[in-house]
Length: 261
Image 1 (spheres, rainbow, N blue to C red):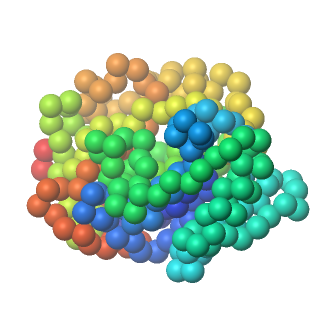
Image 2 (cartoon, helix red, strand yellow):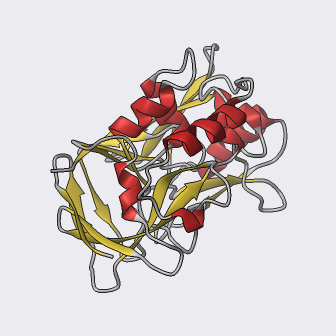
């Protein structure tokens, strides 16, 4: 039986994640604390890896219970701890100094700041998929591929690309459960330039997207809903919370079961 092997939350959008043993899916479909905060510039545009490669040089460690984050600049001794509720000004000043332009922090504790606001549920991938995709690239480990993909739920006990069963053709959805949480699988996630870069240095991997697209097309299971694949730069699954569901927790070890299409 497929089961939850890892749960990863990214409290500040675009920064490092934190692994947890249990978490709650909110009424919006988002995981509690995931992408709760975002860094924006003076035009209210996200300061993220898509637009600013320098973000890869920021390391972050979280204490979710104490609501603190330790920020550190890679390969330096520059680090500082901030309270995420009470030290916004100090945090914004520190980040503005790092990026070299003024930034602000925004917060959304209801839905967070997902890339897909229509399907803001947890993103899903399998351990086997991460292992397979990492094998396409010399020098990229499974952990490094995990940091690049940035999915919330990792499923084990299944073969590579099993999570592609969690979406159907564009006019349909797939109903499934993670423990007691009832989710709807919507579509394979379209990837961006962040996937091509080293998660810790921001260095681009030569021909990454070209290799990825070719390998994804070659390994795409015959049973996959093909209508989503106008291109093959897609991996992991976007979800929503079922309208009939309510806020519930799920945890490491919970079974994952497809209910119906």
